[in-house]
Amino acid sequence: MKNKKFDPFANLKLDPEEQELNDAIERGEFKVVPLNDAEKERYASYARYTLALEKKEARVNIRLKRSDLDTIRQKANKNGLPYQTLINTILHQYAKGRIKIEL
Image 1 (cartoon, rainbow, N blue to C red):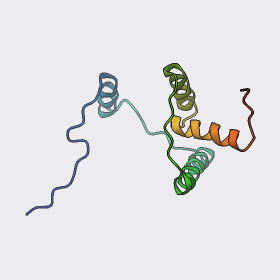
Image 2: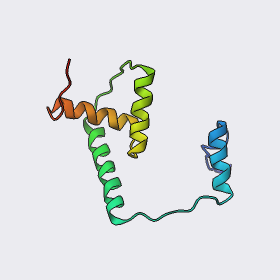
Image 3: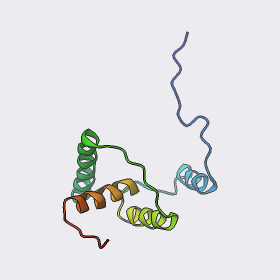
Image 4: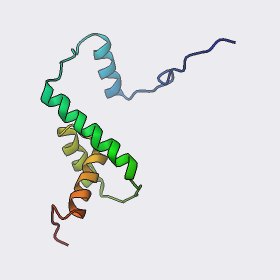
């Protein structure tokens, strides 16, 4: 029996925007831009932070207004972060007393 290599993208369905991006990539319309040392360190810092969190994290489910979540996602995207990381960072800073929220 042959060992078949698993292809996680074999039956992947893309939405129109994803398909447009995928097509542009396949046509070679995007080029790889090397990262400078500061950018490499920034992303390495994100990775270290994420790995440290994985060792100590607990999962929480919360309900948010859709508009608030959309705004958080936009701000996270603008800063090159996953939105969950941004939410976690805000909550962590609040818990440590670094930011104050009027209740």
